[in-house]
Amino acid sequence: MEVFKIPNNPKSLHYDGRHYDLQYGHIDDDVGFYLSHIEKHGGPVLELACGTGRVTIPIARKGVEIVGLDNSGNMLARAREKAVKEKLNIQWVEADCRDFDLGRKFRAIIFPWNSLAHLLDRESVNACFSRVREHLADDGKFILEIWNPRPDFLASNPEARRLSTEYDDPDGRGKVTVTETSAYEAITQIMNIKWFYKVGKEPNEIVEKMNVRMYFPEELDDILRNNGFEIESKFGNYDESPFTEASPRQLVVCVKKGA
Image (tube, rainbow, N blue to C red; front, side, top):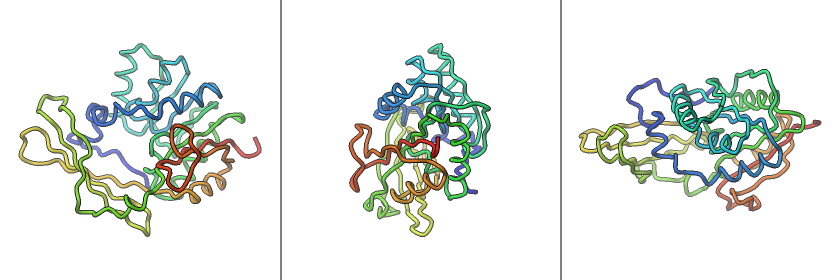
């Protein structure tokens, strides 16, 4: 099985929880979507690949019991720090989403913001979905999200850099400018991404890499069905607009077959 590994590199910026929050912590478009479904179905909730708690913490603020699971101790340390500051009682679990046993069931299991893309082969996805099925209550909902692969993005010039983001370095070294490139391998459906970090006046860039897999709409639906799920609804964006070819996202709400 292939799965993305958090680099064991103290100089990594993308996987430093502080830098991660400065790059992505402002994103909250998806939180309302998940909250609306959780409010319908109730808790407890399990979030897979919770990272620094960007989605977990707002859900906990609403008084919902939620468990955050991630394979990065660095990310979870940041999540714990933020939860403690807000006096939120959240259970954080360091584990691989393909291989965990929490000994309990959940009314909702969520897999937000393209995290599925870190599972690079079918064996990994099947293992993860097996764990989801084992932990999902019979009347529970499994809600996941991933890009709807865009032809223009897949065809990006692998040498062309795009500005990703800019933010102030948490260690006071000045402005951090992040640019990126991407190269798509059609045979494996894997996108090779590079980030280039320019920190303040430091002469050298920091280069970091990540591979993510694209899952096409019919493929994703088939994988879910083959793993014992029925698709209850599929949306194209957080406003719950119907899924179409032009939709930016695949947001899928599933139930267990035969439950």
